[in-house]
Image (cartoon, rainbow, N blue to C red; front, side, top):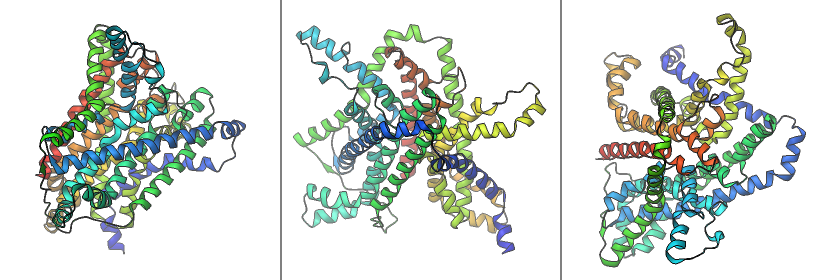
Length: 545
């Protein structure tokens, strides 16, 4: 036993424990708050407002989940099974709507569809048509479902397409040999075997919808995210904001449990380790045009139209926007994104390496704990991190005074450190999944050979493992960098006074009814996300080859 403990007690186990503790500790207060006595304000929220928060949040979740599954699965099927013009471009081009954050999509489509937008202006000037505004009013729950659907369907598309391309070739071809037509195969073979992948993608969509603040705030839809912001900042009621966060966490936990139940224990993975691609069917004539038209339509509403509109606005406003303040915004955004992504990669590498070496109950627990941040909405993480840092400041104020007699009492809780710490909790799962996937591909045989030759775990990691998982490390950095660059909710709540990033500036312009002025910072976010998505796709494609 002593020998076992000695073997497993090293710098990797200590750092992994510290990192996991840092992820879990801030969230404990939220759970505890649910069981504490509420104040009078909470009874008012519970009686008059809580029902609408739950109904609106669930409506957005259910309809967005449904439509993203329909679009994502149908596109995955078409791209995986058929050959038609520009299929290779659409294969990765249909991921690009992820580069446009939902809140930027909402601002852009409202600008396109409102009274002074390009559509109504064109109809008035060209055909003297006066349109009833209700047909173009996007600022409603229906509009929010539309925005979320066109922004988030790539989650379902990517995961389902990956599953179909790697796992389903034999099953689909056997069904064809048995005389089933492609519609039957899609309904009775593809849908059942892809159930796990579809539910996995839909779960990510649901978590993103619950996490959103920009769209629902702009459209004036009362949901949990807007309620937490309003209760905390508008009413100054921290107790009720924490309690709302607790209720939202319970809903998220119920959704995650439902996902596990829906996935079930059925697995349809291939027993053959050699991946055999599906033999695609070449479409001709009308069917070919139909497949191309459908992919192009979804690509256009998800990426092309909003991007063209933003480029047009940027030509009108660039002289006003491009100044020293704008370059400070870029520096702030890139700076915090680079620091947070680097720290997340370090945490993910340490925990993933520990879990790979020690396949026991603790390592499984650590692996699950890394997912906590991504499962919890950003508003809840922000509240828990604020409370955590206020406690640290109170307990360590005497140390601050020793170092600097004029030190502020709230030192860390008004600094960038708190914001970067929140990013680390929120996006650890993104970095961890990529690194873990890299370790799985490498396997343990090189690690074991190195250990047998006398190298320590740390020497093996730096001389053998790190060189082999470089693509996974780069992918993890890119994904986290882009996520931090786009993040709005955490930054709005936790940023220090007068500290702006590209998303917060876009949000401020939109709130001030200056949508065209928001186009240039929006385009910078989209271009960086575009490049990162392309690089990520190329790295994945190279590894699969």
